[in-house]
Amino acid sequence: MSILCPFALVLRCLQRFLSLTETSSVIFRKRVFAHPSSFAAQRRRDPSKKMQLTLEFGGGLELLCDSVKIHNVNVETPKGAQQLAMRDLLVWVQKNLIKERPEMFIKGDTVRPGVLVLVNDCDWELSGQLDTTLEEKDVVVFISTLHGG
Amino acid sequence: MDSAGADAARILGEIEALKATRSDIEAKISALEAQLKGLSCRDGNGSCPPATAASAGLGLGLGLGHGLAPEMIYRYSRQLLLPSFGVQAQSNLLKSSILVVGAGGLGSPALLYLAACGVGRLGIVDNDVVELNNMHRQIIHTEAYIGRSKVESAAAACRAINSTVQIVEHREALRTSNALEILSKYDIVVDATDNAPSRYMISDCCVVLGKPLVSGAALGLEGQLTVYNCSGGPCYRCLFPTPPPTTACQRCSDSGVLGVVPGIIGCLQALEAIKIASAVGEPLVERMLLFDALSGRIRIVKIRGRSLLCEVCGENATFSRQQFQEFDYEKFTQAPLSASAPPKLNLLSEDSRISSKDYSERLKNGEAHILVDVRPEHHFRIVSLPNSLNIPLSTLEKRVAEISSALKEAEGQRDANLYVICRRGNDSQRAVNHLQKIGFTSAKDIMGGLESWARDVDPSFPTY
Image (cartoon, rainbow over all chains, first blue to last red; front, top):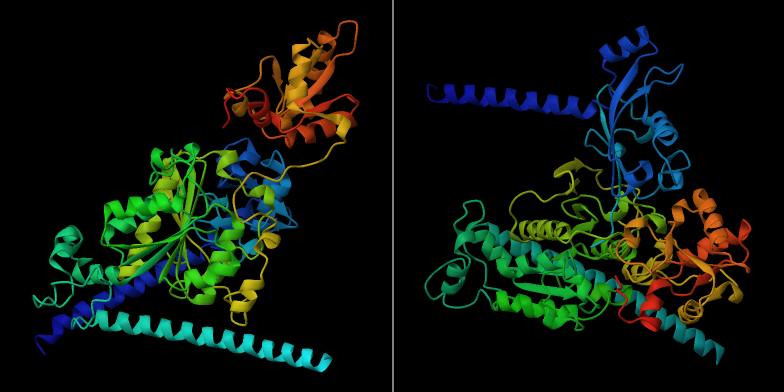
């Protein structure tokens, strides 16, 4: 027992650590789904509040926005909406950043085939695509897949 | 006669179906054999038979369980010394076979490292010949091989680095007709091609055959890398179920590429292939590496997993060998299976076009005219015809006034002619089309662009 006890303690610590990291990673991954109350509440109090986002374009998409790859922008939540969703952001981007050939960015209400969308370095397929809700300081990357070699 | 014909058709159909079943079973058997081999390699009892000529030799005589001959031990000693790689991983590598599709910018460094590190068998597929404008990035080839097969050149380079690796030359374009046969002979496939239809075709073929696919791409100053169809991860179609519009598929020959950029991605492809072949580390599955050379940033992002709805690898997908062979990848992507020059357009009537030779005659005769070059500005800076006015096609609408005033200036007693030129003769037709619509009815396109000028009029005129 005396040998087992410290071992069990270590094991429990390890377990705790593991479960902790597990939870934190879940939180991190869910960040795009979840609606942490602080920001949401803040926006409810102040509906005109703009959200600061970093938008990046790559794989040739930057050519559609004056060849600028990184855009630090403030985007307003649409009237009547609680949160800014990717659906709204696409409309905003098309209106405010895309300077030429919009068909190279948008098809219908979503991005054209061959464009990957990443919210905080995570494929938007994993966070609900157009329904993904955004938070202050999120980083959204639009990247066109390359074929060259 | 009719019934005999129907019988023959029925029998042929049955034969085809049985053949398909047979090849499916063969694929399953070889996958299971590979699995078994992997298990016996990993149990550490040294039960691995020395499977390749490379690993056969004195090793067993000396009682070395891993089957590495003394010269192998010396050659690969720096890898054997790695605790996380070691003799077991090297032994796995020596037993593996890897196919590299494309001996270009990505394939060059990938092949060099794969040959050097001691892959058992290394296959190379390509149908191109080495050209001078390849040399800045396709570093496996040397000037002596210009005009000769890339596969021949790459194979010679690989053999020169490591004569103990079996190099297999496939001097042919990969098509649906030969892909199954070629890919089935290898454990791992490296996609180092340069066009969208090839990428869909190779991915689908890997799904059908159950092979992991190391996929890299590079253009301009950016690169992308991921591993498909490996450890339950997604295939290319899970990520890109619908092909992109052809206008979004830029080619190195149009958009340019800094040589070292595909070099870096090709090296990373070799690394991923080595990890899978030697069964060490975590392959880049469900993750994608994005490389931006200009800002000096590498970002690794999480991508979606295997899609249950994927038409090729999904839950209810029934994509068979036969379907693969019948699939028209060029039609699917609206693009050719080789990144050759775009097809020549024919937008204008005969009297709206003149040849480069005719234009040079008119130039000699001192005809009053203006020449508009509609290439992008950075193309124009490389080389241009004297006295040409650069108005890139994308800015043409906004800069029509410049053409009008240049024409007025050139006009003496007679009307001045308006000629339009570009690199190959497609954009110039688009430009003439537009100019004629807005009133410049005499606008003419110089057929075949500056390439035809260099070919038919002035061979000393630089091409790019």
